[in-house]
Length: 269
Image (cartoon, rainbow, N blue to C red; front, side, top):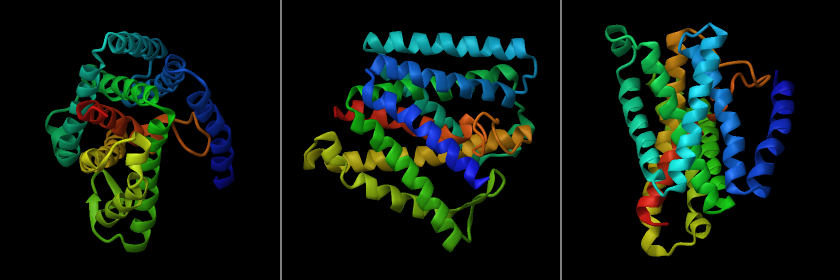
């Protein structure tokens, strides 16, 4: 299993990092959209869709929404798409806190799940594109804080984890792990002013924004775990050998991306 995970990672890294480094933002958005559509395909299964035609129809809807979001972004109105994405993750936080009683008392319809999928995927990809437009280092900065938060949480949780974070959603996650994740991510946040070329005046707001984005990444992970529990599955899919599904790998990034991009927009950075 470990060898399979390593081989998959080695194949995927150049396929993802190459376009980010060498392609212009419209093409990067196109590449990300392909990944987003793969995630949407997995999400359609979590919605309870089994018919291939219905799943393909949902995929077409997401593709149209992605195209529309790009057009909105080119009109200078991308802020509102990012805001919609950030608002969804606030809603997701409340859903995780109330799980599972909230879903037992008010089960979600397929339509509601479909709308949630749009709010998860579309603003995230536009946020990634906006970060890329500001410079390649910005998108790598996002990846860095998300990955370090995940790594820090894993090791801190194994070493010190005693208090469960959300046992009904993800029994393995602990409060100690979250603290370790924040500490790990702050190692990437520290040189943030150099990445964003800002002075001391913007440093404190930038750090606070990064803390919020890190929190959003944790919510993204928990949210996907919550919906997988509702469906009774371990992984979102099998598209990535050894890693599960695409959603399993990008759940934290798609939550942090619109939050970070929106915050930078508000700060004028």
